[in-house]
Amino acid sequence: MRIKRFFNKRLRSVRLPFHPRAYSDDIPASGAWSIDKGVGNRNFLKVVDGQPFVLESGETLEHIEMAYETWGELSEKSDNAVLVCHALTGDSHAYGDIEEGHPTPGWWNGLIGPGCALDTEKYFIVCVNVLGGCQGSTGPASINPKTGKQFGPDFPVITIRDIVRCQRRVADHLGIDKWNCVIGGSMGGMQVLEWGVMFPDRVSSLAPLATTLRASAQQIAWSAIGRTSLSLDPRFRGGNYYRAAPGDGPTAGLAIARSLAQTTYRSEEVYSKRFGRHLVDPRSIYGLWDRFQVESYLDYHGEKLARRFDANSYLVLNRAMDLHDLERDRGSLKNALERIARVPVITLSISSDALYPAYQQEELKEAINQAGGDCEYHMIDSPDGHDGFLLAVKEIGVHLESFLSKVSTK
Image (cartoon, rainbow, N blue to C red; front, top):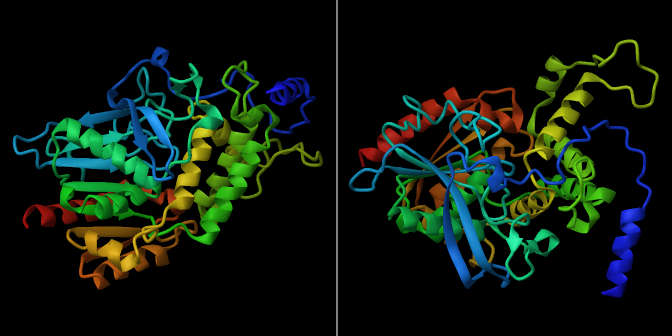
């Protein structure tokens, strides 16, 4: 303990290295949601309170609260419910406007809403902020009942399977015995696949988009670089930064991790067409830190994320994605997919996606079909890279609406 206090004292007094990126000095140490920001459209459910919830790792959490949002009305037979699963830095606000408690618009507006593929006048749409998140659900920025302080780095490693088990508790609470469809892209698609393996009797159809059966070596490599860059920010303080003043949190580390990820989310074509080699200031070119416009773009998105996300949550959820592997501890991939094969599945690729390339979704389709299932596959022609699953809502909506109409007639 004496060594730890000495280390913390030294850490507080360390002279921080020069950093060329001029991030705003009013950014909070953590962008995690708190009640003073407004509840917005959130609902809350205590999954466990004072009793152990055993995680896949064997560690436990004694208090878990999940934040979720709903749109539409649940039918009398409770057969029109659709679970939407969000990606790494998403949250429960999949649909809606900017409002108190929701600083960004719904991340799937255009796919969700009246008259859209996920029609809120037809379906009861549910989106849950994942376990380990920072927008209302229990995560590293939540108070640890044992200490009265934020969990911080003491929050345990979680997996996609842990996330899905918490979502199941929300379904139980809402009286939903079986989802009409579970849908999501990227990390959301990983959750969709686990729903099919873990609870095949509770889903009628699955839509894992722009995702994979298991995290690849390259995906893990990109994640590892991002996590390392975040953790090396001196203001990260080993994950104990919550009491830091605005401007003194791990903004730089989180922003760099986001910049790296943002580079992999979009395509070379998009960057070339939008930015080319244009400078922020054409008169400033020979300074070492004079910026090209693409650099300014990455800095903007890094700062934007730091204002609404928590650095520790980023590490926890990013690691959960790396651990994703449908085959793990199930004997074989075929064993896992035979459970998914009980229901119809749709998957799709984004043509320019270099992070989750098309071969992974093609492999998903072929593996499910070989296991005796029925998986249809589509390619979305989009220049937007991996982010296409968020942006190409009209194209995705056409395939999803057709798929759901066929499911409803079976």
